[in-house]
Image (cartoon, rainbow, N blue to C red; front, side, top):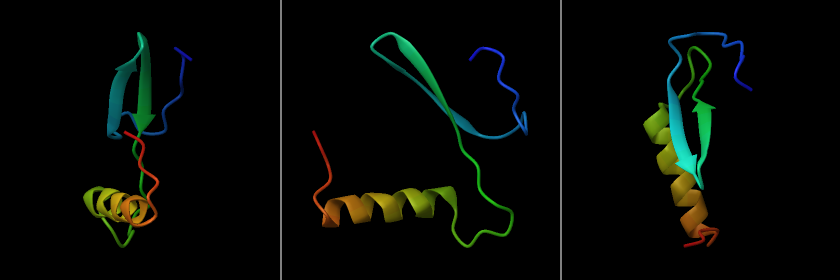
Amino acid sequence: MDNMNLPNKNAPFIKRTINGQEFTVLIHFQDGCRESAQEKVKRMLRFDVQNAEISV
């Protein structure tokens, strides 16, 4: 997966290393979307808490 073709080289991303394996997650939203990335994460967390889908 080293030679990934990225649609936008300026697209935001998150990199995390878990058990020695590096993961890169691209963050993308449609132009004109109704919520920001922060609002979406808050909404998803709220949903998980309400539905007890959190593992610690």
